[in-house]
Image 1 (cartoon, helix red, strand yellow):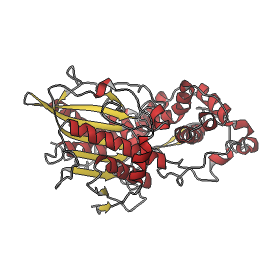
Image 2 (cartoon, rainbow, N blue to C red):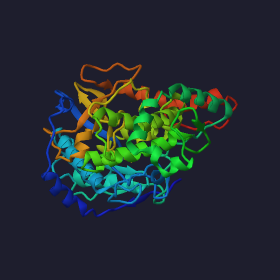
Image 3 (tube, rainbow, N blue to C red):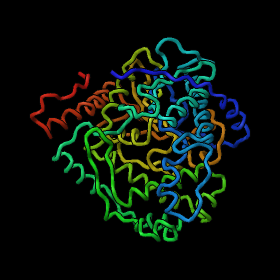
Image 4 (cartoon, one colour):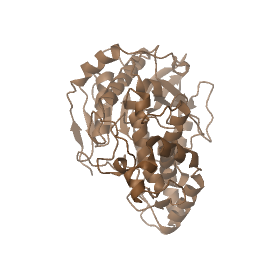
Length: 439
């Protein structure tokens, strides 16, 4: 069993964050976030993506040789949460505090007891820091512990979208699904090359870097490893990720695009490269049921814990994407965001509600618009983040977007069991099927 560790951060940035937020603007009320008449909120489970971080690549990587331009000088080291990311996360925590107080799930200046609140993060700097900043805004007088289950800077298997079952037949079918899901990105590649002046870069002129194309894509599927990719799409994804993060972080929009004037739709095209990379690797049906399995069980455990009021699980976009795919979400495209599926800092919420002695579940994504990410503003109930309520294939919601809890839990358990079904299909002689713990 993995040893549980707890991290306590005494975050002196929280006061600075609040002061800075007070000088910022705001956005209009999101109609989807108005109070739901007649329902009583009972519990919220959050699966969070980390907030704005510096790019994962360090100096000397493809980022340095793929463009003649100089990348933004970040306030943090490679992959670490930026100060802007911390400010945004504190603001989001403040919003959740106001929301849950208004629904009378928690009192003002709440100091939780026993097991009512749980914060659990992947053991990486940018996920732990995200959870800590959120907790500073959410429970400013409670001094919350952030639980991790791995040595610091090591990936936690719960948050690692790794393949825990692979054989030759399965890998062959997965590759077919991945290739079928891969769209034509020629326009996106052309725009990316123009923005970074790719053909003027040292890497391109030396021949080390080639034209972006889908023709050289190869998928790597290995046991106990994340699905991987070789080819120019992987390089383009690294550049797309860095550009999007630079756009969020840098105040001068034109400088963020290395002197180019890009429209919102063009920024969506840039982001679509990395979004496609994530979709293909983690949300195909055969992959999502495999890599999301640990988090589905974690979410189920939290929803069934009668002592819990609020849970915060902090991971990555691949976690949110694979969980939604494994749950067979209906197709969606988020308004107001250049990242179309899992914007940075977004929160996937599983909310338990009660009305007329019946319990329901509502599943939403709560996220900041691209404008708000770039122009930090104070959150409250009248100036709320954007939300999107999900629908799932095979389930029928009521007019308020709510699912009867028994029907949703049956759906969740079915998707958890789908992992065992996958192994039975591809390895019918297996005598060591994993136990889901779900009856």
